[in-house]
Length: 110
Length: 115
Image 1 (cartoon, rainbow over the protein chains, first blue to last red):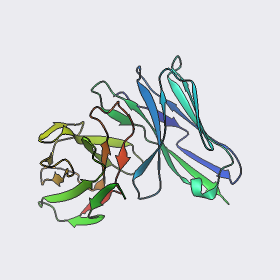
Image 2: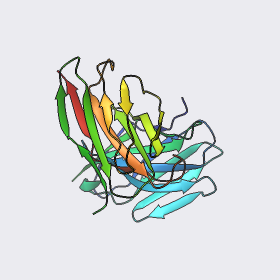
Image 3: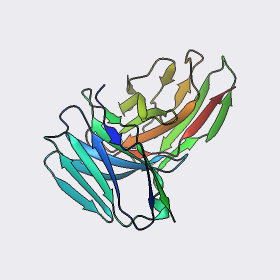
């Protein structure tokens, strides 16, 4: 199925370091979204980047999109322990539905 | 405060029983969705509704049923026909119909365990 795949599956870093997560997808997209999920909670929307955009910033978040490579990256700068969560990318499917990847589990150690 | 409320947060069911998960939103959103999440997995779409009294099957609709009698409410029934119902269920909404149109707002989820 058309799906975004995040890489790596898990990432462990120290507070203050930057965290980079990648997402690859298979078909052309209208937009790509990143969501965050704390353990046992619902997902929270972080940022949406449209297919005609290459880079977008929101606070400590930086998202890039390379449609030629069908990939996106999420960079969290100066990470904090509170950033510990799973991060998902989501892209549009052929039926107009939003398809989520399996996520990257980020652990930020104080 | 506007948002999506799911209940119950935890639910235990015996095999053969139907259970209904509640999802209510006060965001005045047209579209609502139900997703299932299994450990270490992404979200899979069960059903979605773009307007009152209308809904469509997602990727894994077998063993589930929904209704959309009011704009604010989109309950999900997990029937006894669902072979492996133990999972985390997430309800979401979006301002406009069409899942490509923008962000989804999620509830806090309901964890169903079959005993």
